[in-house]
Image (cartoon, rainbow, N blue to C red):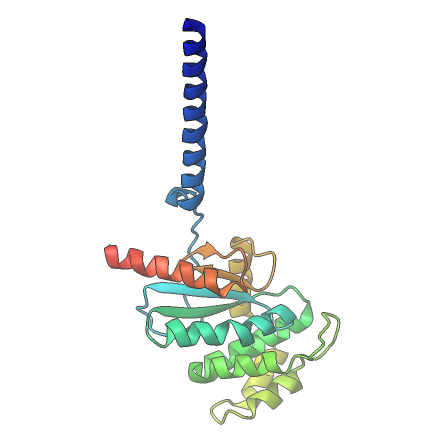
Length: 226
């Protein structure tokens, strides 16, 4: 009788230990330790900013004008982000040039920097026109970014001096800013485009807008509690 009682007690103890371990594991999955989140802020000095400078949440896209996925992100995710958070002053958005596809990536980046230098107010519209001009079925080997193409796109904006744009690209007069971007994407170990960072936290899937919203809302809540 005593042996049976002891065995029963041992079994109950083991069950309790297993249940406790399961609860701990589930709890850890549901509420990850804040200290485990890797947060590396991006220095946006001199970078184009869309939205209120004082916005509590910063979203940064590391993108390449030659990248088809970046074009899709700009068409699908970017408008939602602007509508839901940028226009309300909750989020400010910035873009950092990545140069993964050779000369054309550099030419496009220099052209965009020239437009930003001349008139920051039209930078974002120009940027979207560059992406829109990307071939529908784009290959990284397709050559479509040229100085003439950038001038053609910029001709729709009266505030942009086309001759200045041509010189900035052909003589690499905006290469210093492009090199700053290169230092940034190298520092932040960007290995694919687009890469999206929210207050320094890299999103695992840049196309998961629900996950993006969740992180933004969490950052906004944290800002309220400070």
